[in-house]
Image (cartoon, rainbow, N blue to C red; front, side, top):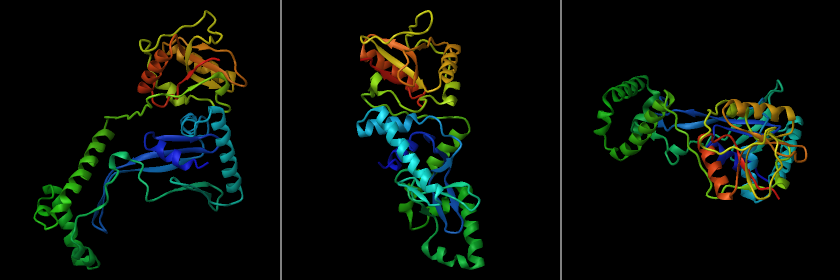
Length: 327
């Protein structure tokens, strides 16, 4: 199984994708920039790096693998674990490991794990299809080896910045102007966004996947701690029901919105308390296998459960909540 294409797809919509036991791929926005040597204006993009210290919780990646390959969450976790073991084994032997459509992992001379992204890939969907634009004529580009010509080009570039490219309009290469304006528009939009306006894109499948108790995740906690900390106290979106001791037995006639499943009981208790402090009424479901399950809502119909899941993901896209249908 090639996990590279799944990582690439997720990085186009999320800023971080965690591979359990291996590390996290993190994408950072890179604004448009001018290359003085080539005279090219490069569109904005996303630069991908790797952080080996973030290894817990791969709910996004596991969920996509399960959905794309039409297998249970448990099987998806097992496949992902085998791939990670193979990658770590090859890295320990001193080999370079290439993850298709993402990049290459390797240890340097100091035995530090390094990552080299694929240079030709752009994970920023807003700039798909935009190519670098040459602002100077071909003749001027070839004459940059001359010191006097370099000074002229720099002066031309500075004047264009101040006058909004008024000089450039007089050039015969007017066909390039639309592409330049598009690239600059994206740059200004992203710059404004970086100053305080954040736009979160959420992609929700028409029919979100549901899992039975037999298909619960097998090895990882499904909630990222940082995501939990950002959840605001809003109890009007989901109807919460819990018994006095906050423990209920799954009823096959009801549908449950699950906030997380945890290997460690202590982690389940912490998440339970965090949800309670945020104004929710979480509850513990019956322990399944090695997992402690924490729910945040139960519903009489499948439609109500999916509506609640969509609303929750709309507010907290990285939460990874899912629907449990007891059998």
